[in-house]
Image (cartoon, rainbow, N blue to C red; front, side):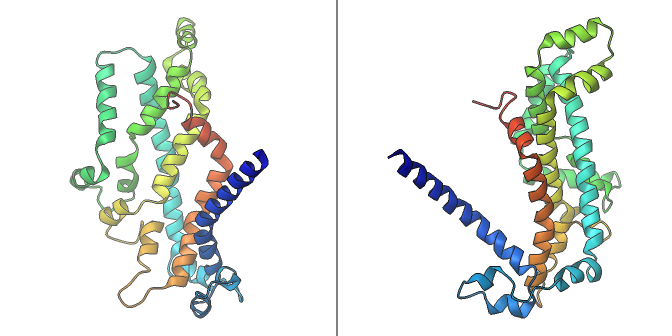
Length: 277
């Protein structure tokens, strides 16, 4: 009876995994197909639907060299790296101060920051756009990442992990005369590595997949990002499906690889620090 139950669970997991994997496998195979081959084997569904009969790299060549996706990928990577490092640094410093330092208005500041988590992006989009425009950063690369460096969720995540560190450790460092900058960088940060990786992954996915904000803040293609560049392949005249599949692969592959490599840190960071039940 136990073996039958285990087999049923394994079968259900395999079926569920197949449902999620089949679209990605279709995109993966279609990325290496020409337009004629792409539409030749859509129906009926067979192995030719997922595996190219005559694989080609022309789609990637067209994207990278003719349509300028090489620069677009660089822009997206630069945006992601700056957003990750800037946001993790800023939010971890704020979380350190809110969790361990005692100053007037600390609890009120934390409550206000937590309140901002309830405000949806759609409600903040127009005010953020107007502020960025008024300070002269519209249509600049800085405008892509600057409004999103402060993240209430990351402050909440890091604060909970800092709170799990024994306060005696911080108190002992203060008694020994250790400056707060050194306590923060040498003592506290190494103890929340899992949370830092989790936060970095969240911000990387956010920046790498950004679409709406770059679409409204940029008016030229100089700082274009992948999400907008792939969407521009949809035109009124035609839809370059083979290029869209290839662009989708270029967009998702780094995310999949990074998540596979760092998933243990991500899971550890999200299931500890006061977030667990």
